[in-house]
Image 1 (tube, rainbow, N blue to C red):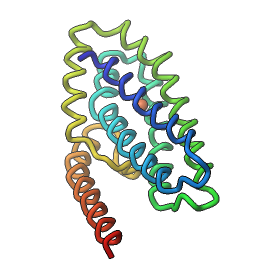
Image 2: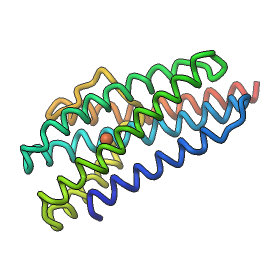
Image 3: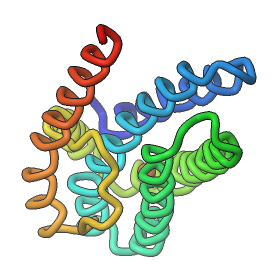
Image 4: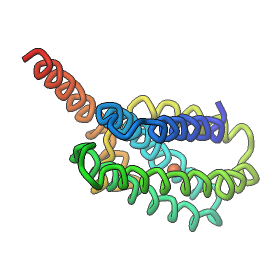
Length: 188
Ligand SMILES: [Fe+2]
C-alpha cells in the first residue's frame, strides 16, 4: 500500500464523517456526540501515524519539505486541543456546534494543503518503493495508535514514539470503561 494512497483514504473517511455531521438535525444530540467520538478516534489515529512515521520520514528524505511539515504539526496541535475540549462538552451546550464547525474547517484546510502541496512534493521526491515501504509502516502504526488526541504530548520523535506506546493501551482501556459505564447507566 502506497503511503499517499493510505493517507488520502483516511482523509476521505474523515470528510465522510463531516458530511454526516452536517446532515444531522438540530436536536440530534446523541448522534452528534457519537459522530464527534468517531471523528476523535479517526483524527487521533491519523495525526499519530503522520507524526510518528510520515513526517519524520519526509524530513529525513526531503529537507525542503520541513516548513510544510512544521506547519502541519501546528495545525494538528490546534485540532487536538479542539477535540480535547469537545470531549468534555455536552452537545446541548451553546458553543458545541460552533466548535465542531471550526474543527471541521481547520481539518479541511489541513487536508487541502497536504493534498495540494505536501503530497505532490513527496511524490516527486520519493520513489515508489520507498512510498510502499512507508505505507506498510503507516498501516502498522495505525494498529497501535492512540484513539484520543493528547494535545500536551510530544509530537516529534523520539518523544512521541514513547508517548504513543504508553497512550494507546490506556486510551483503549478508557474507551472500554466508558462503554461499560454507559451500559450500566442505560440499565439503571
Ligand atoms: Fe495531517
